[in-house]
Amino acid sequence: MLSGCSAGLRLLVLRRCVLLSRNVTSGNPGRAAAVDGVLSAFRSICGDDGVSLGETVREQHGKDESVHRCRPPDVVVFPRCVEEVSALAKLCHRHQLPIIPFGTGTGLEGGVGAVKGGVCFSLRNMDQILDLHPEDFDVTVEPGVTRKALNSYLRETGLWFPVDPGADASLCGMAATSASGTNAVRYGTMRENVMNLEVVLADGSVIHTAGRNRRPRKTAAGYNLTNLFVGSEGTLGIITKTTLRLYGVPEEMVSAVCSFSSVQAAVDSTVQILQAGVPIARIEFLDEVMIDACNKFSSLSYPVSPTLFLEFHGSERSLEEQVNTTEDITQSNGGSDFQWARDAETRNRLWKARHDAWYAALAMRPGCKAYATDVCVPLSRLPQIIVETKEDLIESRLTGHIVGHVGDGNFHCLMVMDPSDQDELHRVHLFSQRLARRALAMDGTCTGEHGVGLGKRSLLCEEVGPSVIRVMQSLKDAIDPNNLMNPGKILL
Ligand SMILES: Cc1cc2nc3c(=O)[nH]c(=O)nc-3n(C[C@H](O)[C@H](O)[C@H](O)COP(=O)(O)OP(=O)(O)OC[C@H]3O[C@@H](n4cnc5c(N)ncnc54)[C@H](O)[C@@H]3O)c2cc1C
Ligand SMILES: *[C@@H]1O[C@H](CO)[C@@H](O)[C@H](O)[C@H]1NC(C)=O
Ligand SMILES: *[C@@H]1O[C@H](CO)[C@@H](O)[C@H](O)[C@H]1NC(C)=O
Ligand SMILES: *[C@@H]1O[C@H](CO)[C@@H](O)[C@H](O)[C@H]1NC(C)=O
Image (cartoon, rainbow, N blue to C red; front, side, top):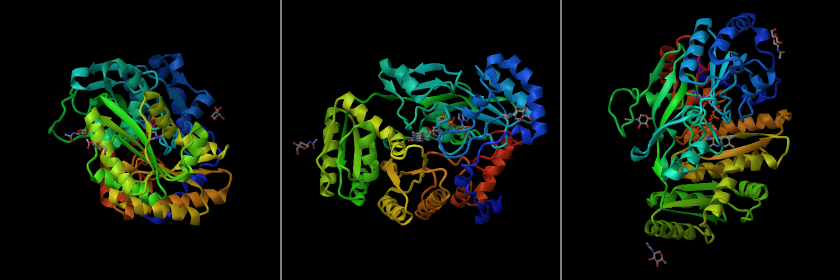
């Protein structure tokens, strides 16, 4: 494990992404035979149309939205309930076939690629919302339920689930990657909002990480296994249910947009707003390159300069106070007057534009691919790291769109690049590595929300150190001794 931290093992993942996918089973006759032998048993569990060998289906399940190249599994199965997941996992265990859980494939770190072949468990047919307890503010969902589907279901109840990655991802996939989004500054990430998980382990056994049906608001009962599985990226088990915390829809909400003459002024304002204790619900930074792309993609007309998108939640009185303090701070940093979005339609348009930032960046260079860096630093270091990152972009002759959840100290540099241009790919790779190391040097992390996947395994090692990696490896070995669960991810 120690060697995993050495510079020699760092992989040029971005370079590999342009290689064409090859036929994985053809290189491994042993596994091909095992897959063949087990197919009829798979079909008897989840039906003929619950098992797919089709090339298109396998390719759809071998890649996510990242630049990592497609690694199709040998076969895709579509279980309909936890009993089927468990029965399929037992077969995989008996035949030593890798298991790769698949939510909605919106991941950004190559997490679903079948690097060792094996069986992809697509969980989209398990899409029931179970056990809504409005009076306790919690709900349990199956892995095919997405965040938007849950919020539509909750519409009449006065409750909502706030964690909102840009994509309409599955909630169990979000638990698996410890996702967050624009609301995390007020409501927390998946880590704060998952109360219990039902998980099928590699040998097919089914566990409930907090105990079956348990959903207390707090507990001091033993090791927190729920937390261990949040962010485990499919490497420890298949999440077949998650119990989530819900929130009351705020009485009032208003959104505002404020432009600044410099990045420093926008980011300084963010830090001061949080230091002043304003319970802001959303505070998103877009640099001038990003706002220009969003203007074009979403037909908006904001000034092309560093910008904050803000949102306030609360009673009318509390909003007035929050807005007063915030306006004082932005004005003292030379910010523009607020452009308001008060009605639901204008607010939704604003936040849709923000969530579409990824597609807005891609639209600036059609035919290209995007890679998003994802560092997160303590709040006070944010102005410095963003300013240095923008200088680095210029020196590296790269276009990067900076956008981020700055209220958490987390920001993305969306790099849009031509995958056939080796020199550009190389510069993007070196830039991303420098940015991650800059964040580590400022006591931060290489990934605030997208996860480790394939590309950040050696950075993880640098971040936590070899002795922590050894403990992580022993946990993995204890829970999945044959390394069947999503092999090749997180740990080297
Ligand atoms: C436009 C865009 C914007 C995004 N914005 C954000 C953002 O703001 N914040 C953020 O955090 N992320 C963001 N993402 C990334 C992505 O949406 C999240 O990582 C999301 O949590 C992935 O969920 P999924 O269901 O698509 O997972 P997948 O891509 O299907 O899988 C991701 C990983 O989780 C594992 N996994 C999936 N489901 C399960 C399960 N049921 N049990 C066990 N393991 C499982 C997979 O094996 C894989 O390793 C964005 C992506 C896009 C394309
Ligand atoms: C992959 O290889 C297997 C085994 O040789 C073969 O049966 C299959 O047709 C190949 N698939 C593709 C897509 O080439
Ligand atoms: C355990 O972890 C879960 C998921 O991260 C979290 O919601 C919960 O609050 C944690 N429990 C305790 C007692 O810390
Ligand atoms: C907010 O500012 C306005 C105008 O400056 C003032 O009249 C009002 O009392 C302030 N409200 C609060 C809650 O501070």
